[in-house]
Image (tube, rainbow, N blue to C red):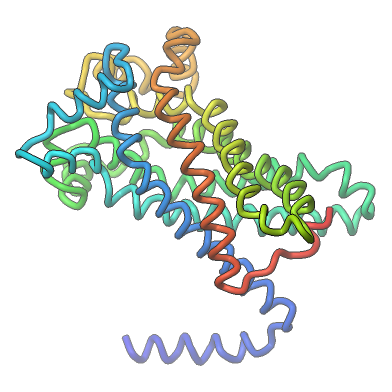
Length: 336
């Protein structure tokens, strides 16, 4: 192992020495963006996990209200006293790890693809073409980055949902549940929810990142001089707007994911979902249409609250981490 590391370092150090200073600065910038996004995403998803547990119960139950679903979750909790509240943290390990990986790939990938798109547009047609194509380039960058991030997230999201909908899986813990799924259902089961996860995450990320990018730029430009102290408030409000938009756009796919990837023993709705909508994207889309608007948006209230608050905190933490790491926005992506 030591010999292998020595060989890798011997090959890497001279190559790094030949990289231009501007490329090094770009590398540090994207690494800082990725790390900031990873920590911010993981932290905020863990903070709102209790709301996610309640939302999942609403989606797998028979039209349960918010408080009724929370009571049902608590009623199923083992143990006594305050220890029972730990039931609201079901799926904590896969949530923390999954969204760390997803956040790093999403934020870092989006920023890198966006900057590259702007650079190519500017080289092809100057500032005028860049301004005209700014929004499509940002949306495409967000979608591509999220697709890569979804591949990393999918197995851990399935694991989280199993732990939230199956008491036996929750009792086994994350590591043993992962082994159980792999041994008894095959590794493919961990990617069973890839299509609905992508259906949820891609529009979610496109809405969240692009709305935040556009609105935050206007808000920050307004908070200069004597209004500089209002900048944190502008970031919080922009995050709330971006989170609400993302939640509404992506909620039907979130419900589909819950019913597809939960435990077949969790409820009638989940069992039906396993039988009816697991055979392909078209079948899944037909199932969603059969639910109607109200059915497709079951559990929206807690998810809307969860996503809005989470996104607001996430972007505030993301901006703070970038400042702490000394990361400065790239000019070509900010001055368009």
